[in-house]
Length: 590
Image (cartoon, rainbow, N blue to C red):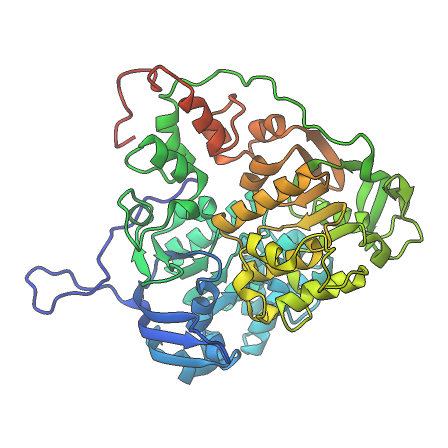
């Protein structure tokens, strides 16, 4: 789907009373006036002096570093904060003219649909179709109208084939689409989504965003969504609301916030998608937001017509973990069909594939959470048959999609101490595999050591769960969507850690829909479809040629073998001739 042309822009910073020719301000869907919100027992406010008006009928993306308060801002819009979370709210907040505190979430839910970062937290029913119909039944809708609404919503998000499936039998991405469908069924005037594409493969993410754009364009639905993967959402945004870690937020067009002029309220380069980082370095103006716009520049550059030979990555010959003719699934529902897979010490293997292709099932099988129906799983060459999961996890660290499954202590520091004690270490000893404080510093969580994990943002919880499993330095590490909720800077810190542990001989398997992460860290890429491995090879071959899983740089420079911004810049820095093939630069209107 091609992104829309930007709508006519207006200034929403206010209109001078009586100014000649001043345009009338468009109505605000959400109006924050000096809003400050503090969670119970928190020392500092989660949001401070938010003074911004969000126009009605636009698609607005909320961005900012992990922990800046994006999820809190979204929860204020429908009254979940402070009604369910408690805390203290100051200032004035109006949503479609209503005060969410006075109206209560029950009434606000008819005007504001909400999709959580953890979709399973909002499910009530067991089956897909029943979950979508639940809110309509509560609203007393006539049966015929309800059936029409359910059918339309199922078709809109490509859920018709799953209508009779149990929710607990769906993949994480499928559950996320069901949550979006349930929120849309009541046809609210505002739809609020907290990282709606975080668990979706690139095609599913594009489908969901296309549906949101249609709703926004055809029905005038105001869409407010928070997202870290800006490369996915920026082309479709009318405006971006940037929440810095400190300072006042700024609402503006994507190009204005990503522009070259340094300012305290401009999105830092470290939080920008790869295309924008490359374009800024090479001086492309106007700043491209889509690969199509970037191609007008990249096609003018002198680049190699074929990639050079890539040196093989040194890895142990003996696999740490492997499967042989593995058949596995859930009850009578088979998922894996004769899978042969291996990860060796000193390599990072990234598993890619559409939602429901079997990636998570393979990870769970490797750690013993799902037992083979046929075939076997081996750890250090020995079958894990009959071994307890706890014994396997002494050598294999496993991070599930939902970090809450690993977090049950009162503080982040205690989470790590529990893991250490379970593995026979004294948390206060001197012979620890890694000092807990050092690990927290590397993960950007040193200031959260004594925080209650479940009160943190999803990105912070993800890193806290990582700390809990990494503190023992396992021989193998299995990560299921580890960048969910992480901004680009936090991903860079995670990448540095993964590369360090790979260098020390750890075998790492990552399940992700984040193709940019795969491009940066993978030694091997394994592509799965319908429970089978359909490709297994170096990332330059698979990511460089895949129309679905190619990185932004691979799309800009096809055939070069470049996958990351660093790949491209390394080449241009080494050139002595002019980088452009002609003296003509692309027209600004290209």
